[in-house]
Length: 609
Image 1 (cartoon, rainbow, N blue to C red):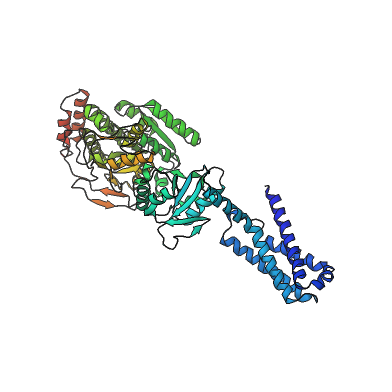
Image 2: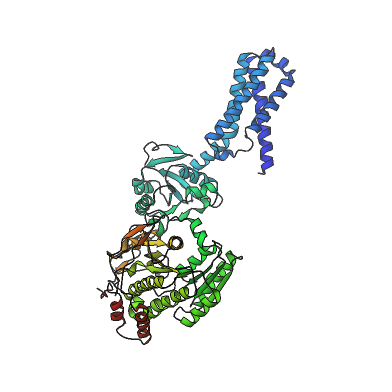
């Protein structure tokens, strides 16, 4: 119904309520005066006029009564109180009206006005109740976990949204004061630990977790509990987003693997990032990869003077280039196809573009592939990092940030060993040039190229089996946007020579990850999708480490970022030894792993089980 028509309808109803209250009170209290009082019509006009003004001032014509709550009821009662005062004044100045007329008139007016407004909400609640008990209803039946303000908001949205068709049937909440009570017509039936019992009792199809302000570890435990049912699990966005209007409850999202990390989302100081990125020429090598492309996305929002994407794979470079052109048409964007192995080409790019900040994300990182092609790992990771870092120093870049990995700590595979060599290159270059050279070390990134998540998703889509290398293997995980935002902030802390270590939270058991991914897909492990243990691959560890024994941690302003103390090593003729290593790799030597071990004593190759 049109807004103006609705308002006119409410005003008409209010006028009729005043007239009804005024005349019916006379008929019930002073029937002999009824005809005489009708002649005093101006009192009725005063009552109608004042009621219209009072209701307008109190905003009764602007409320959406389907969503009415306590505040709306208080406004309505205030309007009733003011109008009753008007009735009292009319009774006082008229010789015909007595106190009993004022009381009856006030009662009729209050009941009628409340009824006219809250009848809409009552009808809506009755319709919902009727749907709930109807065995023929085909809408998905929903259990809401969390009987708080967010849960109440969900119920209102489920009833009235055109985008969502679901039927709320019950609440679960651990607050004993809420047990047995109703919120917007939906009953709180039990505790969260009883989710499986009540999901069966109420024939629930979906579970919505409406606890946006609760600690992520608790949310993780709730999701694990919900996975005991066969229901689809979804979650509400952060309540602050709902309040600011960034999202609506229509954006209820499926629970994802990231929700099972059991920690809060990483927060960064955007002002710090803006301070050193803004109005600077920023280069990202490997800019088309999973980490590199996210770096480009976040850098693009911080007003760089120019963003330079460098990548050898033209398809990836093209994809991120086109995405940034669409989303940031004002961005000064340069995209170049080049290999970090090509020293001449890298020199030419630095000479032409003069980057002030360099994020070096280009690398080979697939552990088993590099075990089979160790010379390629050395040529690309070690040689490429040396080329880009040396050019950054010679051409006067202000900061150079290397993307490293926790696999560089006491490495058991060639990929990790080459990344440790990259960290050593960074430390050496920092002594040689004025540029601030730093490394940022973190673990596995959810959804990145080479991550186990896309592999599991593909295996599940193909009907299984999901393959893991060992039941006890654990890894640290972080989402791509989280890791990149911390890399950007670590760049703000860079003074030169540091190895920044990101706090990845608690390690995650890969077997549990596989089980959860299968269940999040609506399937049951070993019944619908098998899980197969294949044995550790060459170079693979059961547990990854964040620090070497010699490294101590210093804190930063962001508690998620720590600084590892640089480890001393013999850097005499280090550049010559690195160049000799890369030359050997180019000659396809068969003893490259032994040569790497001579430079990285902590590198201990191991065989697969």
